[in-house]
Length: 109
Image 1 (cartoon, one colour):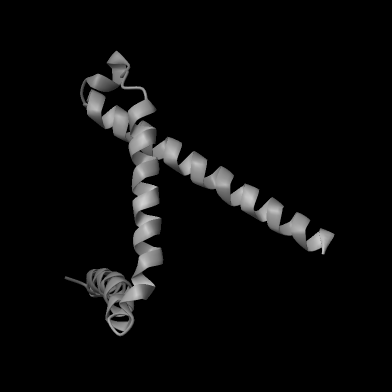
Image 2: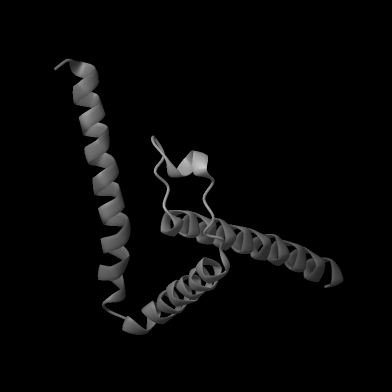
């Protein structure tokens, strides 16, 4: 094991620790004021609902080329990917609309 491997493993460890702290520390801080979690829960539920709708309308067709080796894409896998893509598209459009509306309201004021 040379120094490159050691630094890679150290980097993996730091990324994992950073992800854990990014989730745990706000939860610890919000224990003092549990009502602050309401906005977070509402946001997560809304995005989950959006994904459910997107998953429901996503197409489950898989081209024969991708259903075989080495891809082995199933109908559920294709539907999940389609649902994620539709969710990302809707969130992107909502973000752009929010930016445009904000800028227009700044101009009007």
